[in-house]
Amino acid sequence: MWDYSAFPVWALDGGAMLSSGDLPISDELRTALQAWCDDVDRAMWGPSGPDAADNVLPSGDTITAFDARGRALSERLQTELGPAFSVDYWPV
Image 1 (cartoon, one colour):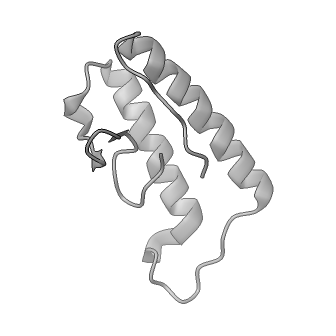
Image 2 (cartoon, rainbow, N blue to C red):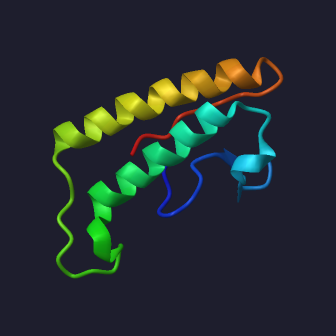
């Protein structure tokens, strides 16, 4: 799930955000997950961050595109983690 300035994978059994190093996944997927989160950050908040008064939220089409990319990444994550893990995607 996307979260401002964070790695986008959470553990539900403690509600904790996981570090990218906590998961047995490829470096390529780790980088792709962080890039997706960073891209959503920039689209949502711009360079000034979430507290800037001039923030303009992205269009519905942009959010739809981010969600499609996020869902694809979640499927890749499930594949790399295997059946011992359950991966759910939370829409932007």
